[in-house]
Length: 327
Image (cartoon, rainbow, N blue to C red; front, side, top):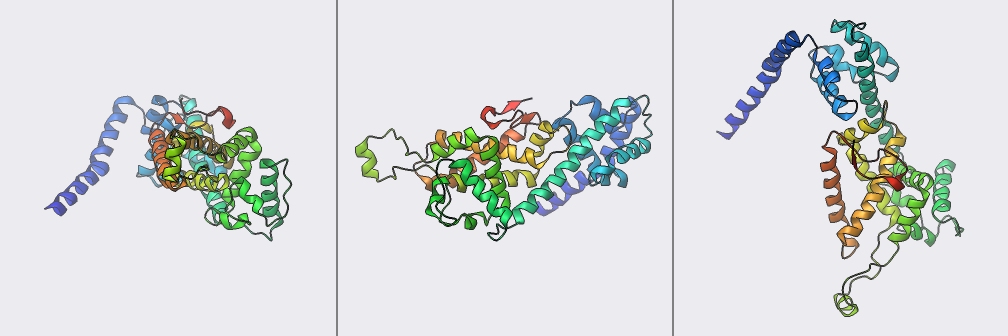
């Protein structure tokens, strides 16, 4: 019986999408004199609220031209918009703003797709200690975070001072590849004051409300900060999952006027690092073993915020001034 009801529900949804909804759109167009794309552009302000609806409309269209529009090369965006306006029989002279609005939306859609490809490429590229460019980035990260402490050698316990697990950081980049290093270095270079403060705080002992006797009785670790670099790689994974799932579209469509780029992704990482640091302090975990619980809770909070189409995580960079805002 349950199977029958599920099949029946799917059939009704199919009929609604294929027949009733298209029929309704036809009636609305006749009544308003505007296509669905026109109504979306004229009734929604620029940003995620408009672009997400345009993207959905193009994907669900019965016309191959509209369906394929979201996959065109950036150089073909302008021609694609002209073809769409021609297909919809819209007079560009009486609707001059429509082409501009559609072009901005399509650039965002295509740019997001290209950003996913670029980020995935960096994630899949392993750290290579034989590659001079990789080594240079790693050495630069040390100099940015420890400017007054010369590194004794490439293989050194000093790496633990900035939150790596062992003597050689390359082993810690396995999960996120070069993407983790790129993000950490961007944070250290472009918002150095905040990165240094977060690093400093992460190395500090926990200030517990317990008395010394209670603390000693429970045998908690008195220095339960977290490993800065390891957490940075972990937050890179969080940002990556938000990107590939499409959850980050809300944010990027609101902050990138045209094509979202790697810089926008890295700025988002900086914001997430700073916010996770604050969240960690607020949660006041007993020890580092609670990291996964805190991370999961933080992830859910960010996902909930991104469901608001007017939300932008970091509308004005630098990260020192980043706060969640409603546009």
